[in-house]
Length: 118
Image (cartoon, rainbow, N blue to C red; front, side):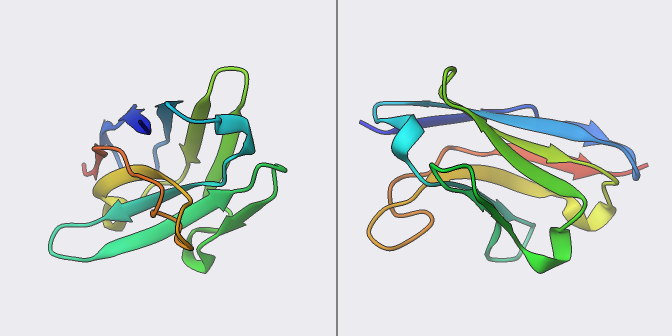
C-alpha cells in the first residue's frame, strides 16, 4: 500500500523559508516519479513541481526560482524547499506519486498546512 506522509508545514512570515518533507513507503521510491501539489483555500489542486527517478525536475512557471524539489532515495524521502514565501503561497501542500497517467494517480498524502502571514 502506498503511504505518503508530509511534514514541515507551519506559520512563516512573508519572505521566509520552509522545507517540506514527504516520507514514502509501500512502493519502490527510487524508481517513482514524484510531485508536490498545493490547494489554497477555496481553490482547486495546483501542481507545483515534479522530480523524475532520473533526478530531472520540472516546475510550475510561477514558482520557478523560489521553490526547489529534491529527493533522497536512501531515505525514501521527497523534499520541497520554499524560499521568499508570499501570502499567496498559503495552502495545504501534498506530495504525490505518479500513476495512471497522472501526477497524483499513484496516491497522495494527507497534506501539510503552510501559512504565510505577518
